[in-house]
Image (tube, rainbow, N blue to C red; front, top):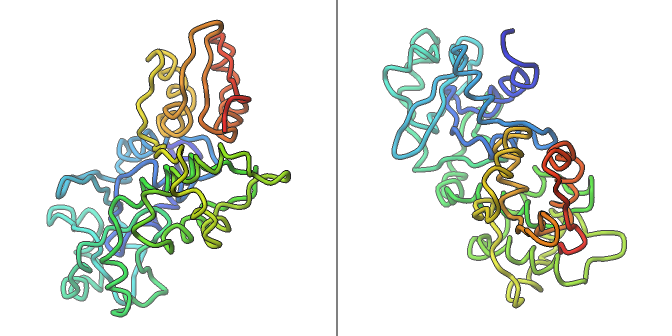
Length: 300
């Protein structure tokens, strides 16, 4: 009850997102796109808020950061528990594994390969009855960087408002041939700049992927890879203002890909019209406070 309302909602989402031990990957941007795709929220700060009141506890393993949910196994009782992520021995009591009736059964089931599910791909949960052996090869082949690649694609694609579904789009992304996934954000940039977008707007991202329309743009001259980690080239105080007001994840998604103009006016140059529209609609107060304009007409 001491947490903000949206943080409480995110916590409930984590209960469905964690593996059967109550462990999840501590990746704020991926968690946001998976659980709160339509909200302006700093998921990193929300996870820290949960940790401050001991709802979750962060830990490191293998160079990655994870989170454990307190007393998870007091409330969740999987039929055939699967240890998807590593759980330190000292945190077994924290997630209530030592108190769970299925504790020993969980001990007998090893992790599945080196698979770490990315956003949109939930590990097998209570009603699933455990992991199916025929799924192991597909799961083990999953790229640990797929989450970042999809986030880059989502940012670069010229969305028509309300048309694309993040969960459906990610499923379609993961169904695409592995050898082209890292090229899809660049293909989306080329498509956005092509002038070939239909009058009614771009199709839903999931349809663009499923119908393999991206193949027309994989080798286009301007098919550069636009990622959410693109370095921000403008003044640091401008980016910080957006991050403070709208969250670090939001700034990484919509400010970092922008170009910067000092003259004749201080302005943001969004990479896509979709990104520019998000900045104008959701960052209006920051734009006004800083005296900035957004040159959406120059965006793809």
